[in-house]
Amino acid sequence: MSGKERREQLIQISRTLFAEKGFDGTSVEEIAATANVSKPVVYEHFGGKEGVYAVVVDREMQKLLGMVTEALSASHALIKLERAALALLAYVEENSEGFRILVRDSHAASGTGTFASLINDIASQVEDVMVDQFAERGYDPKLAPMYAQMLVGMVALTGQWWLDVRRPSREEVAAHLVNLAWNGLTGLAPTPRLTSSSHLLEQRQAALLTPPSPPPSPAPAPAARPTDKEAREAEKARERELKEQEKARERELKEQEKIRERELKEQEKIRERERREAEKLAREQEKARAREQRERERLLKEQERIRERELKEQEKIRAKEARTAGRQAVQQAQPSGWSGEDRGKLEPSE
Image (cartoon, rainbow, N blue to C red):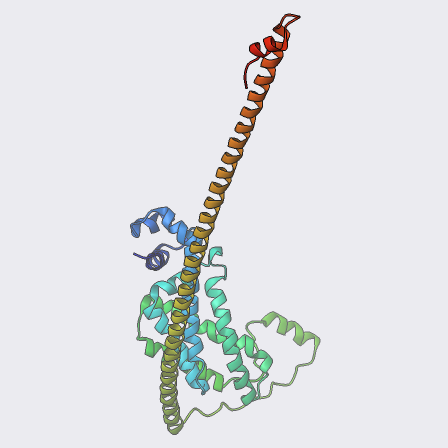
């Protein structure tokens, strides 16, 4: 098994264990034992339990955020809402382990706050949709962030509930969510007020100090629901968008495949250049070593010749010194009155 395959195996095993037992209930020993590897293998790939948990959480957040982001790319607001609800419920149904990890515990090892952070990211995208809808209906766009949190929170909590009950079907649950959210938005009051039961004491005190205020102006009539014709047009628009998205995905896949092929070719060229450079460097190093060896041998021979010359010179000097010493010894040893002929007989011949 390659390193990449081993890493993916550890991620999948950890994902299952974290979903079942949570971060604190899962240990590195259990991850390693389930994968039939030693603990150092887990540390080598992720540095510890925190590292693999962060990878698992990041993957799940990116997956869910990508699904919701794609759903919000539709043109009509009603379709955006429908697809966003379906995207969340589809993720819950098809990635139950991942959703349990996101909502079970927001451990500091994730580095992002997991589910709360994810909800804020989605709400920021929904906020843009709400701003446009409020502007069309004459409501204050400054309230869009608050309503975005309300809407996303409603869908998210419904998803948490549906994670365990799984009834009714996700399409039916999404239809009810859209029914509540959309029809509630079409009848939204521009200046909503809290009910009197929330501030009964304050209202009684205010009544004693100030004259009664005039009744609030009636809320504007709710906007009309989409007609059958509008619904059919929305459905056709949904189908066209799906086809366009499919074409766009195909184009992206082809472009990515071309990019990968180019990258592989470039990598192969780079590896070939590196191989040639390595071979050239090895040849140069071998030549340099041969030159150094020849130079060392030349120096050794030169040193040997110098030593031989020195020895010969020393030998000559010693022989000359020996002859000189012999003559001196003869001269010192001859008696006085000897003739030159007699001295010649005693002197050693050269």
